[in-house]
Every structure is written in C-alpha cells, then in structure tokens.
Image (cartoon, rainbow, N blue to C red; front, side, top):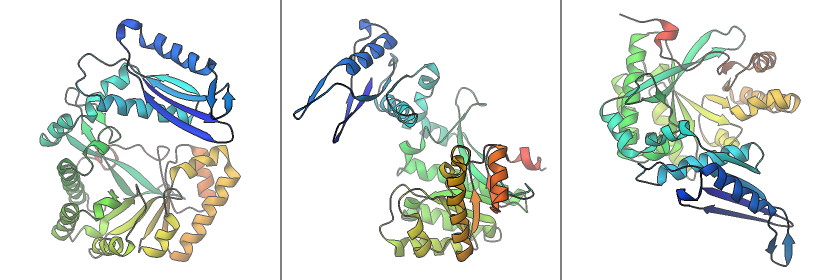
Length: 353
C-alpha cells in the first residue's frame, strides 16, 4: 500500500510511505479505505500549527502469492498514484487483476527471454499532411509480444525503464532498426520516424549500431527521421550537436519530440541543427479544454518554426474538433488516433510478396 500525503498551510510537506500489512487483517479494499479515512479524520501537529485536513493520494494492491520481487509491485503502485494525482489528487486507487496480469512485463528475465526469442514487432502510426489527410510518413512504435497470447502486444510503458542502459536495450534497438530497414526496403516510397533518447546519442554502442545501419543502407537513410526524446536537460550541447550531425550526414532528418514541454526546448532550437518540431501532445489536447489559449501557444510555435524553416507536426490528434482547429491554424502535419492507430505496416500499405 503506497501513501503520499501533502500538508498545505504556509508551506508544503511531501511525505511518502510504503505500508505492507498481513492479508489476514482483511481484504485490500477494506484495509485501504480504512487507512484513507483515518488519515483524513486525524489532526496533525506540524511545527506549531494544528492541521485538521491533509490532501492524500493513495494506491493499494493485493500482492500475489507468487511474487518474488517487490520492484514491479512498487512500480505499479507508483504508476497508479500518478494517475490519481493527475485527476486532482485526494483519491484512492486499488489495482485490479488487469494491472496484476501485467506485472511480469517489467521483469528483466521476461524481457530478456522475449528479446532472445525475437518476440518483438513494430507498429506504425501515420503522420499526415493536414489539409489533405494524405499519409506522408509513419512513426515506428515498438511492442513486445506476450509469451502466452501472441495477439497481446506489450507497450514499452511496461518494460522500457527496466532495460534502459542495459545490454537488453541495445538488443531491442538492434531488432527495431532491423525491422525498420526491412520495411524501408520492402516499401520503396515510405518514410519512417524512429524514437531516439538523447542519452542514446552519448552511448558508444548505440551510436555505432545506428551509424552502421545508416551506412549499410545509405541509399534509404534519407527516408529516416530520428525523433529526439529528452528525460533530462542537455549538459554538453557541442557533444550532442556532433552526434546529430553524424545522423544528418547520411541524409536522415532529426526531429525534436514533445516541443513545448521538458527542460530546455527553446534553447535546443538555438544550439541544435534540427529539421522538425513535434508539438507536445499535452498542448494539443488543450485545444479541447482551453482552445483560445492553446491556439495562441501553437501559433507562436508555428511562427517560430517558420523563422527557422522547420517542419511542424502536431501529435495526439485524437478527435475531429482538434484536427479542424489545427487545419485552420495551417499546421503542416498531424498525427494521432483520429488519423490512424498504430498498426502493422501491412494494414496501411498492403502485404508485399
């Protein structure tokens, strides 16, 4: 059971607890609701102030008997907690059987076995020209294939953090690159985007793997775009710029993903030689809840892109009304479930002999 409490008077205390209780004390729903209620009803002495109300976000789970490690359990609890907080905090979430069935997907042995057996597939989501909805390229999105149910595909949400920085991450990337270039060879006019973390650029094994593929397939390298993802701020721009130039030397394009969020997006425009801006999905989604403000932000990004001569892609276009606003704003390209879901490439282009 994971508890996170916020005490808010003239200052804020953030406290986090992991509480483990015996199963014989009652089922998880009863225990969780009891703790949640008691925490709300208590008064707290903080400094010299008596606080009679705190904001609590709390998640709970009934740990399966076969569990051998708490790491994945804690990960699931934390993910549920973030979901609760995103809805406004002060809530309780109890994980059910569906979430529990996904516990193995974060296990390193499970992932390693999947990669050794090459139980991996790329799905492709279309990126469309806004005015015509014509598909201009696809973004490759990796999935693992469930061991017991081949029709069930496992999102990287469940396994990417576990393998990041390990040899299994390199193995996965090798399989992804192999499939992407097979697709490029099979479909002569297709362009494909591949996600690339900024940390990957500073990984010698990863860069060697990427540049080797670009060199061996240099006749199709100009149909590849690398979408840079950021998890932390760049410390050495000169080094990153050197790696970006290596990618572009083969004719590939470089996109800055999730522009408008993160650490230093605008500084990246000054320091890095990129080709494409992908507007962060959280901004695009605001076109439904705060359309005028969101439109103003998107227009400013569009104007900035025109100065630098960047292409602009708006992602997370999930509804027709969002699409229509982006069309009105003359955003060049759009991507999202309204235009097309991630699917095997054959679903869009047909099967080749």
